[in-house]
Length: 634
Image (cartoon, rainbow, N blue to C red; front, side, top):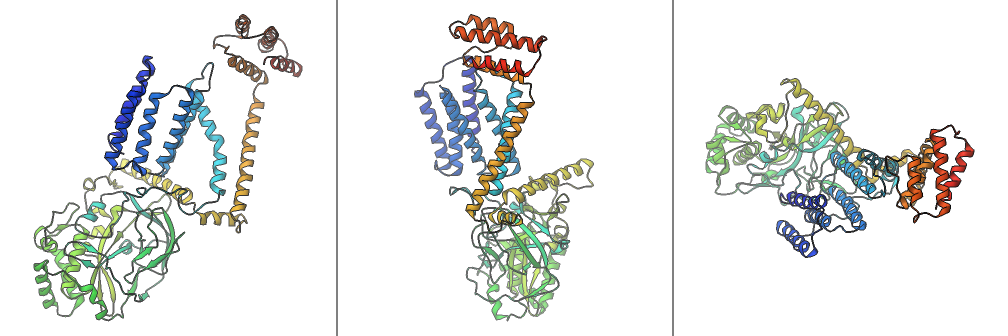
């Protein structure tokens, strides 16, 4: 939301509160129209439109606040309340987390409490009693909500079409890499995806989650290769595959993340997955909703080891006129190493390890010759600096190489056993092609900051430098340990919400019905089941309410019905009035009651007083007599 919207809404509501408590009249329409037009103009200037998700929700909030200034009849009150319900629904366009759901539930109870307060014509109960009533209404609706959630025929994707800006501002890796973009992403604590392994997870040095492969370089920015030949990728696995399940958060792009090389393509709900010849795994459609897929990967393998050197020529291209000092360095290293490719790779890594290079989230700005300035002047950078410079040196030494971006590492949550991979785990590394060995992963960052690979980012970068990233060391303090446990518990709760509520897809609904023996159920069967269970849930709740009513004192219920009837006649009972005083005041109200009704109510209140406070027994005949007298009062 724009920063000006909340103060404006608060100012309008304060204006309305001042009118209410001071007893002044509502502002005239000739004053409200310019205010409304200014609000619309503010939205249009802020968003350059009044349509779409952000602009539409902002407009709704402003107009709802202005509606408070023209409430004249009870109908206007209900219009405001119903608009509040719609505004709560609009909040789920931005977030569907368990926290948002809890806030929405609290807001619904508050709105229902307000709505119930308008219905009282006599003495209004205390606020706590009205809140209990609002909560009770929500509680009565919960069984029906569960039935509809579980059984209502589900469709793939959202129930309604979202506006064009509904998937904007996604956090995640970009399809390009240049100095600074991954280091900026690494300051985010947001979860990119979660993984759950069937057995023990691989060692941390094997936790490389492959994402985007970059091969085109213009001197500053790395991009995916535009035209890749349709060649067969030959993988020779070494050892058993690692099996796991990934729950990927929406990021608005097509790529998927898997450990190293996949043993098979994952099966996606509602779309297909494909893999390119450079082992880039892509979905058919952008990932705009949370998805879950089963995967199997090999962390030990030989990749395209039998390719010819000529087939790898496309991974040698460098732009002309850039980084002359790096070219000179590469030529000297190649001359010293001869044709020993592993030796030349080792010499570059030794340079990173022994010379004063630094690993930092705040590298200096670089000019035209990015690699030259990094290698010979600043010598300070993040993983994208080291991976990019390493690949440039490799290509300059006539060694096929490319950049791979993705994530490295992950943190096991001891509460639910899921591994959380965060945006702060974003990483870039290199792959070089060596004859008879194929593509080999080389992580030059590990030569400068091995703790980054062996542990995590916070072991290399001080926690205060990680912006909003929360990091705790169990050895720091008891408080730090407790905060870490709370964080794990909260994230496990969020994950359960994502897995069982937000990820209740049509496929999961079919699996659930299959377990119930309804595997072949079509939408008509689901509709009948939904109707049947809804009626059953409603009947159960009505039966419980009736049972609760029966457990109450029948004498008290009859007296309450009598007081309700009198309140509808604009003769409500005052809190201090007993039956005798109430009867005397009702008898004086000659215009509101006829003689027959006066006699009936006098006898009703006298009999009630004897049964309630006297010695008259509370027998079935006396209660029947009270009901008869009550029915005479229309």
